[in-house]
Each structure stands twice: as structure tokens, then as C-alpha cells.
Length: 118
Length: 108
Image (cartoon, rainbow over all chains, first blue to last red; front, side):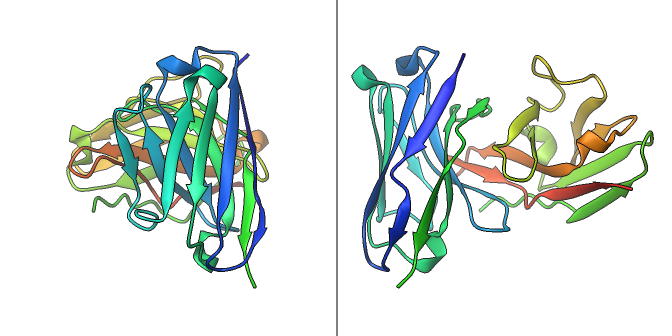
């Protein structure tokens, strides 16, 4: 059974940093591209970042480019999102999700809540 | 950047058909994927590549895509279909995933 479990969310002050992790199991992690997708309270889905299976290609949404860094450790079946210079508008549930460019997202984690507030 | 436009809400009586549109410039040339999200839950892929149903998705869910509009159709709507639905495409020009704004389906 495919499982994706996010961790690392919490309350952080504007300008602060946070590192999200996603532990993957139930599939060959190193064979799949992965994504982070977020959802602000009461709002729609917003794609954040994608990384290919070997980290050869990395993509970011414009609102997070230069502030967020996606990475992965295939040996540990883990996906990460380093978030710096956080803003109030980054407040959201962050989902870890399996899927690649042009390949639909077929599995999602339950999400971890990031709240940016003073 | 590429934009997908969905109606904010659709209301439908049980047993009837719900039609959710997703508009975008020449979206018919792209592959559209659809997700269902119930409150407090992660999204679930219900239609991939315009019209393919993943395993476990009822045949009541179908999709089409042509011109500037992609469509998700839910036939014989049930109370359990009440949810938010999102369309999604991969925009090759920017190498970005793009989501529509979402449509809330209410079963009357």
C-alpha cells in the first residue's frame, strides 16, 4: 500500500524557516517524480514544487521561487521542502504527492499545516 | 502563465447529472486530470488523461476535452459525490502544474 506521511509543519514567525519532510513507503520511491502541493485555509489547491526521480529536474511555482528548496533522499525514501523567508501567505496545508511532469498525481499524503504568524 | 477557469459551484439533485467545466486556452491540446476532495481529506484522482478512470473510480465519472473546455461529468449523482473538484494540466511552456480554482458540487 502506497503511503506518504508529511511532518515538520507548525507555527513560525514571518521571515522564519521551516523544513518539511515526507516519508514514502509501499512503492519504489526512486522511480517516481514527487511534488509538494499546498492549500491555504478555505482555498483551492496550489502546486508548489516538483522534483524528478533522480533530482535532474526541479521546478517551482513563481510565488515560492528563490525561497523554497525541494530535495529528496532516495536511499531513505524521503522528500523534503526547505522553506525560508516565510510569509503570511505561505500559511497552508502542505501535501506531499506522487506524480511527475505531465504524469498525474496519483497518491497524496494527509498534509501538514504550516502557519506563518507573529 | 496558463490559467484554468472553473465555475465556483454546481448544484444537482440526487440521481441527476452534474457537469463541471474547466476552461483554458486550447486546453484540448493538453491532458487534463480531475481530482475530488472532500472536507478534511486529501484529493483523490478521479479522471486522468482527459477521460481515463483510475482503478476504483465508479463508471459514473467520465471526462472529455476539446477546444477550450474540458468537462467532468458525474452521472446518477449520489450524496457521497458532494465535494470540491479540481482540474489540472501540466503547462509545458512554464514547466508548471496548473490547477483550476475548484468547483464545489452540492447535492440537493
